[in-house]
Length: 88
Image 1 (cartoon, helix red, strand yellow):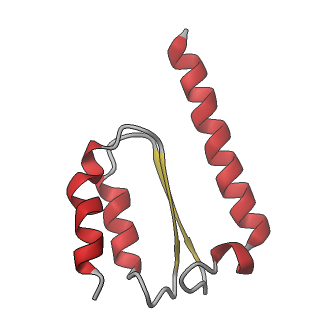
Image 2: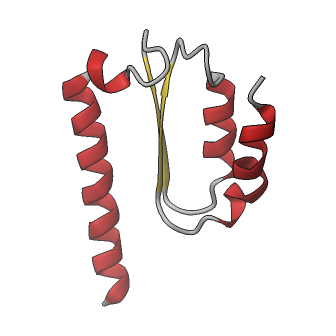
């Protein structure tokens, strides 16, 4: 069980004010998918979650490269754009 490793991020995830993109493999047998969902739910700021179908731990990019890049770049662009409008 990784609960002792995951506990700190869950304890403090509601204090994160920056944007959070959670990418989690649907078939991750190292870190349960539910942990990624809990982190997403606890995050307070701009957030998005993507559960990569069929991907195990750290396999999302290798199995879904195009979708992975689309998700990451799209999230960055949305957050940068939102920050630019917030500064006006």
